[in-house]
Amino acid sequence: MNDDVYEDDSSPLAKYEAKELFQEAYQAQLAGNYEEAIELYQRSIETYPTAEAHTFLGWVYSFQNRYDEAIEECLEAIRVDETLGNPYNDIGSYLLAKGDNYTSIRWFKRALYAPRYESYAFPHFNLGRTYEARKKYLDAARHYGKALEQRPGFTEAASGLHRMQALLN
Image (cartoon, rainbow, N blue to C red; front, side, top):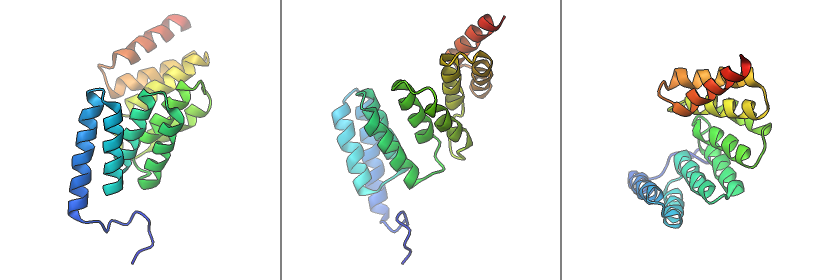
């Protein structure tokens, strides 16, 4: 038997049940039923832990301003699967929400190097916000621009880039 903690030896049924619970949790989250979503994400994790379930549980905690718990869930997500980019970006976002404009940068940059991420526009956008808050407008403009390259219709990134262009001209 492999000693790897995350060796996949669970049944297909457990994976299926965990996925179903995850989907139910996500629907509860979208409906604003955060306590129900938390319970369902936790049940999903108990059934079959995934990086996504930990990350989304953290996301729900963040809606309740429970940033330390959200960060813990994201760290657990990274332990389960270090290739997923979302928890790195989310940790940076939670640190930014807590007022940490310095440590957050490291996490956004790690998100950019994660091989599995649906949209690198978000860590670029968040780096733009961070650099803007630190009055590093050229760096902010660069990252807002990269966010727009990744996702052309990203209106918040476009607004950020326009703000930086106005400040730099």
